[in-house]
Image (tube, rainbow, N blue to C red; front, side):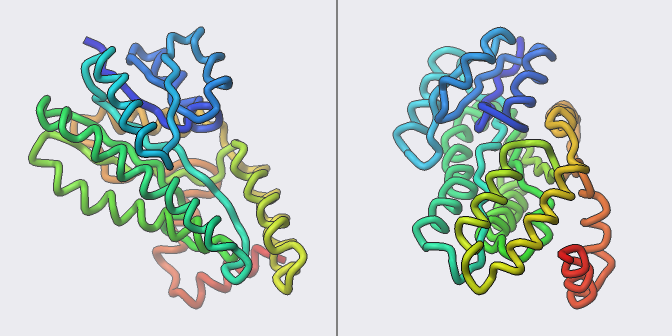
Amino acid sequence: MAKTVLVTGASSGIGEATAIYLAQAGYTVYGAARRTDKLQALAVYGIRPVTLDVTDDASMTGCIATIAREAGAVDVLVNNAGLGSYGALEDVPMAEAKNQIDINLFGTARLIQLVLPAMRKNKWGKIVNISSVGGKVGLPMGSWYHASKFAVEGLSDSLRNEVRPFGIDVIVIEPGGTKSEMISIGGNDLQRVSGKTVYKPQADRLVKMYDDIEKNAVEPVEIAKLIKKGIEARRPRARYVGGGMAGVMLFFRKILSDKLFDRLIISQMK
C-alpha cells in the first residue's frame, strides 16, 4: 500500500518539486499551502491539495484530520513551509521576527505533534525537516532566519532520539542555493528593511552576493531527490546536504575557526 505523504509549502519551489517527484514515484501525496489556487495545477500529478496555514492551529489540526479521514494517517511529513526574511537585527520589527519564528519553527513543531500519535500507533513514520545551510552558517542581515533554522536543527537532533524507539525517523535536509522564490523575496525584504538605514552598504553587498548564489543555484528537484533518498533509506542519515555551494560552505564552517570563517564570509560581500 502506498505511503501517504504531507508536503507543506507545496505551492512553489522545493515543496512543489517534492510533491510532484514523490507522486510520480507512487506515493499518495497531499500538497499543502495557504495559496490553494496555486495548488490546483498539481492535480494533474494526482496530488491532493489541502489548505494549510502553519501559523494557525485550527488550520493545522484541520489539515491532519482531513488526511486521517481520507487516507488513514500521515506516514511521511515533509516540513517544508518556511519564510526567508532578511534585514539587520536592529531594523527588523519584532512582529516580523516573531512571524518568521512562528512559521519556520513553531509551525514545524506543531505539525510534528499532530502526526506523531498515528506514527507511534503504526510503529513507522518519517519526519523530514527542511533546514538549510543557514542552519549551520549565519550570514549578516539574516539573524532571525538563521535563528529559526539553527533551532530546527536542534529540535530535530533532540526529537530524533525521542521517537526512534517507536520506529520513527527524523531527517534533516540542508539545501544550499536552490532556485526558488525565497532568494528574490529575501533580497527584496532586505532592501525594504535595511536598504535606507545605516546598514545600507552591507545590504547592497549582500544583495549582490544573493545574485551570485542564484547563478549557482540548483533546480528544486535536486533537493526532492535527497528527500526521497532519505525517506526510502532503511537507516537514513540524520542529515542530507545538497544545492549550490552547500558542501563547500559546510566544509569550511567545519575546518575554520570562527574568526577565519567570518573573514571568508566578509570577503564574499565585496
